Amino acid sequence: MSEIIPAILPKSVEDFIAKVMSLPAAIRFFHMDALEEDIWAPVDRDFEVHLMVEEPERIVDRWLERGAKRMIVHKVDKALTRARDKAEIGLGVEIDRSLDEFAPFLGYVDFVHLMSIKEIGHQGHPFDARVFDRIKEVKERFPELPISVDGGISLDNYESLQEAGAARLVVGSHFQEIWDSLTAK
Image (cartoon, rainbow, N blue to C red; front, top):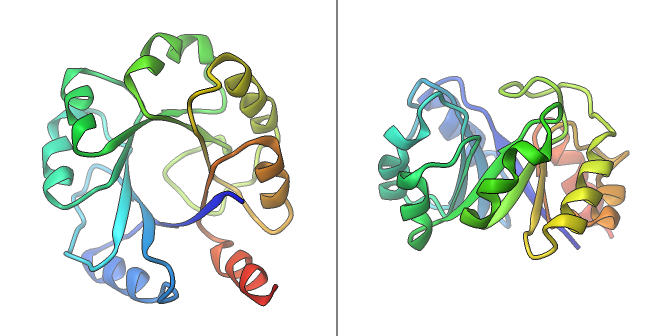
């Protein structure tokens, strides 16, 4: 079974705290999308941060100090690879970009984070089924790298993503209904 990770895209510090507090108590790990605005408050749960910023290398140390267990970036540089001894580093790959473009960097990261929506940085966008071919391609070309999938995941597709080989599913809008279906079993 894949790791199901709730995604939080906070609008303010208050919104961040409210969203973390609304997670079921059994959920001890969450995914946070970090945009250019710095939204943060200390929390008592582990987390990964998706650095959707122009210069992620400028804020890597800040997120390490905050306790990030994993960091996802869309470009790799030396500052990020040096952080690998403190946190896992994942390379975010947009749905419309070729894996060939990212292949040279995959030896410097711990996992691949496939986006399964066209427009990143917002929740509620429709799922793009092309991600199934992306999962297959990553598994064939880079079988040692775990695959994380992010965007548009719902009750309709999460099991198929697991079967395709996704090790982690980052779920935003539909997290509660997936969680409820899993805990009802």
